Length: 191
Image (cartoon, rainbow, N blue to C red; front, side, top):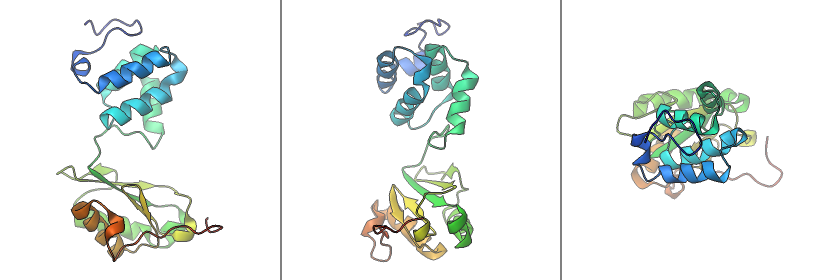
């Protein structure tokens, strides 16, 4: 295939075309009729399929939707959901919003960075853990909050967060550790 062809449905780079996950992206492009206003939907599907948005993948989406690559890159870097780097097998997200920050979330981040040899926003060398921070998760009553593989753990300390990550890496389920139980928000409790 010619990767310089700009017509919709054409010009797929050979590296992507050989990957079976790419068919999902192509179906989505076709479903939205290669419309530029489908950019967010297409990027969501692409990330779900590939785990991250590579330059090659973003350039292909730009060609197919007939938008400048800078627009695709701008959207991919603006929204927190998107990532340009492969994520780890497990994820740890630490809230750094005001309530969590006041209750020492920065110390939690530092402890996790030191104990697991990973900087916030990066993945460990073995690909097991991605450590991220977010501005606010909207559960201020449970501050400080850590989200482990989608499971919210409230009222964390640096020690309890590190223990929860160790359990997650060993057992895949932070909720199964007796020392670390997710704190659920009660009706009416919140921000």
